[in-house]
Image (tube, rainbow, N blue to C red; front, side):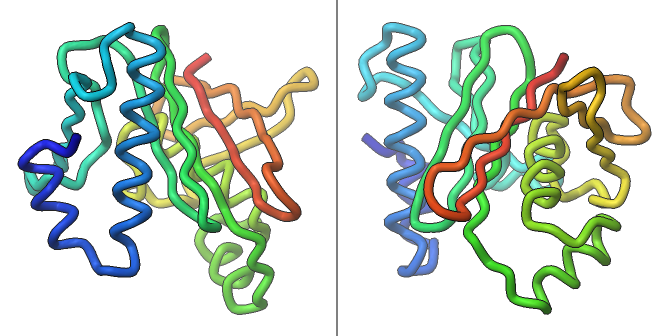
Length: 176
């Protein structure tokens, strides 16, 4: 079911990541199929990097207003979709190595996997991803809800969380 462009990306992906890439495309096609009624084999996914034009940017469902996001990690692929708003999803494995937690703290000001997952989800929903300095993302509890934002953008994001397995964190951010 891969397009020619996706097949090229698959072929040039490191062998250790090919299965994850393929699983991501299949999960995303399945989700888009369920929501649009288009058979999975006919769902056309495109990804174009806004910096270089390469086929490694944010995934989109061609010919649809469905917003999608995809994340790989912890041996799992997760996808999220919304008809109404930009959406971002991130999955993080339970990795409490001191050097990783320290690096997260340096990048975000908050040394935790939980915070990192929230930040990545917001950046994906924002559409700019890690082209934005993660320290510019704030996530705070407001009225019992987690709300995120990038400091230069007017959009606020509702942030939700799911724990799939022991320590595996999934954060979803959707424009409020």
